[in-house]
Amino acid sequence: MEQNQLVNDCLKGKSAAQRELYAHFAGTMLGVCYRYTKSMADAEDVLQDGFIKVFKNLNQFKGTGELGAWIRRIMVNTAINYLKSQPRYQTELSYADSSLHPVSDESPEILMNAKELAELIRQLPTGYQTIFNMHAVEGYSHVEIGNIMGINEGTSRSQYARARALLISWITKKTVDQKSVEYARK
Image 1 (cartoon, rainbow, N blue to C red):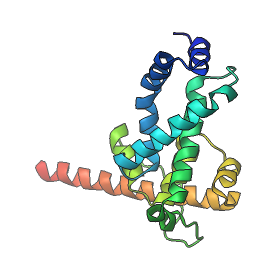
Image 2 (cartoon, one colour):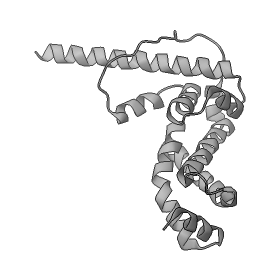
Image 3 (cartoon, one colour):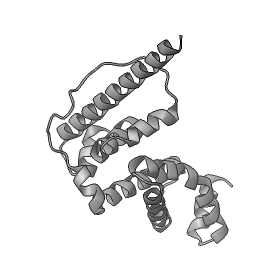
Image 4 (cartoon, rainbow, N blue to C red):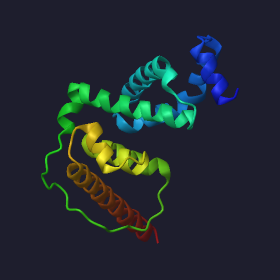
């Protein structure tokens, strides 16, 4: 079914259209939610809350852009609000300007599949993970991130740089470890 027709049918309350919309986007959006949370159960909670918002606010979709992009933005915002509301994430979302990790512009040249990289990103502290995902994956500017997260733009930039530096150090270590294993096998 065409996107605008699907939206119109959903707005008319047609349950078949609502099921189709959910079925079409749920898998992809679960992946988006999972990038921000630390467990699949949390990601599923965010997904359900997000789709409630999608159906509640579907009348605000203008039809000028991609429906998937509009839904993705709702899911990201829902995930961020979830992180802010959950006590177990609140302490990890602190944005102190402590210099835990040096900022580096090194770019290690390694081969790593997307799944391995995603797992490394998930190991970042929640604050780093959230800002890294918002900027590097979702394409939000640091000004937008600051507005959404209630932090200043500079804090967003420094958290992103620290997340990136930490990922680089992990990737570099993993590369060195892999080369050591390969060398030992020879």
